[in-house]
Image 1 (cartoon, rainbow, N blue to C red):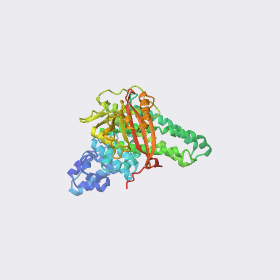
Image 2: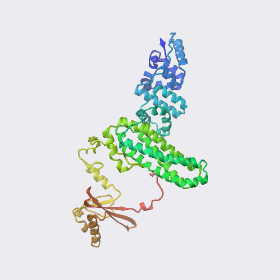
Image 3: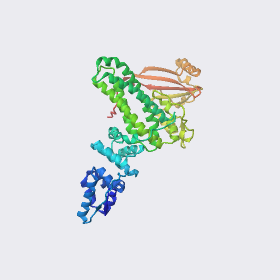
Image 4: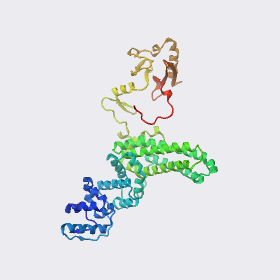
Amino acid sequence: MDLSAKTKIDDLIKGYPFLMDFFIAQSPKFRLLQSDVMRKTVGRIATLDQASSIGGLEIKKLLSDIAAEIKSKTGEDVKIIADVTAPEVLKDAESRHEVLKDIIRDLHQGVDMAVLKKRFYELIKDVEYSEIAKMEQKLMEEGMPESEVKRLCDVHVQVFKESLEAKEALALPAGHPIHTFMLENRAAEAIMNGITAILEKVCDPPIREIYKQQQGSLGVLIERLAEINLHYLRKENQLFPILELHGITGPSEVMWAIHDDIRQLIKKAKSEILGPPSSEVLKTISDMVKAVTDMIYKEEHILFPMCMDMLADPDWTKVEKGEEEIGYAWIKPEKGWMPESVSGGEKPAAAAGEIALDTGHLTAEQINMLLTHLPVDISFVNEKDEVVYYSQTKERIFPRSPGVIGRKVQNCHPPKSFHMVQKILDEFRAGNRDTAEFWIQMKGRVLHIRYFAVRDTNRQYRGTLEVSQDITEIQKLTGNKRLLEWD
C-alpha cells in the first residue's frame, strides 16, 4: 500500500488492526482511539499528519515506523509518499469538539501551553465562538465540576485567543442589549485605566506619602467600579435565562461563578483601601482589575458573539424587556434599536387553568399555597373597606375566621381603635399616605404590623394590605451566615 501524511487513521486501523497497539505505544494520547466516540469522530477523518500533532510526534518518523511495523507483521512492503502540504483543518463539528475537549483535558494535566497552541492551530484553527461554550458545557455534563472549568477558563481563552481575535468585531445597532453591555465595558475600562494609573504612581511596595495622596481617589474609583454589579445582574437575570431556553447552560454557570469572584474582590478592595498602605492591598486591587478585564474579553470574544449567532430578534426582545428594572452601570442605553412587537416579546401565554400575572402565571392552587406559606400574615381590604381575604397560615399571629369575609374592616377592630383604622383608610384613599406601621410587645414576642395602600397602574386606590410579622428572632440576627447549616 501507499502511505502518506494524508492517510486516514481509520483506514489504517481497519486494514491493519494491530496498528491500534502500535499507536498507543507511540504516545499515551492515542489511547483515545480506544474510545468509541473518538474512533467514530476524530479517528474516522483524522490524517496521520494530524495524528502526529496530537501525539507530539515527528511525521516523517511516524510514517517510517508505521511502514516498518506493517512490514514486520505482514511482510508487506509499504511505499511512503512525500507530502509537504500543510495539515488539513478538521471540518467535522463533532471531531473538532473532541479535539477541543482533549486540549482542555491536557490543560488540566499540565501539558505545555506551546504544545497545545500548536495542536490547536494545526487542527481546528477556525473555531467558532459557540464551540468553546458547547465544549465547556459537555465537559461539565461528563462530570467535570463547574469549579474546575472555571479555574482554567482563563487558560482556555489563552489557547484560543489568537483565533478568537481574528474574528470580526461585532457591529450592533445602538440600543441593542449587547451594544449596551459593550458601552458599559468601555466605561469600566476607563475607570480601570484610572485605577491602573494611580497604582503606577504608588509603586509596589507602596510609597507611603504618594499612597496617602492617592488613597481617596483610588477609593472613589473602586466604588465606581463596584457599579459593574448591575452589568452582571442583567447578564444573570436577563441574558442567561434566554440562553438556557436554547439548551446552553455551561457558560452561564461558569461566568456566574466568576461574577461572584469579582464581587468578592471588589468588596475586599473597598475594605482594604481604607487601611494602611501595603503590597497586599495593591495586589487585591490589581487582581480585581485583571479579573474584570478578563471577563470583558470573554464577553466580547466568546459570549456576545455566540449569543448573536444563536438568539433571534424575539429573544432579544425578552432580554431588553426587563433590563430597565435591574438598571445600568454608568451609562444609559442609546436610542436606535427597537425591540420588535411580535409574539416573541410578549409574556408567555398562560396555560389552561393558569392565571396570567405581571411576571408569570400560576394556578389558583399555587397562588393559595404561595400565600399560605409566606412567613407573614396578610389580610386584604378592598376599596369599599370590606375584608375580602386573609391568609390562613399555620400559626396566625392574630386570629381570623371566615366570618370576617365581607365585613367592614372598621368593625373587625376594638372600638378604641376605630378612629385610627379610619384615619389610615382615609389618608390612603386621599393619596396622602401609602404606608403605616406599628410594633408591639405581646407574650414575650415582638410583632411588626404594617399597612400598605394598594393602587392600580393609574394610581387609583383599590384597597389596603395588612401585613403582620413576628420579628423576635429577626431582631437577634448579627454578623453573616453564608453556609447552609442543617442539623
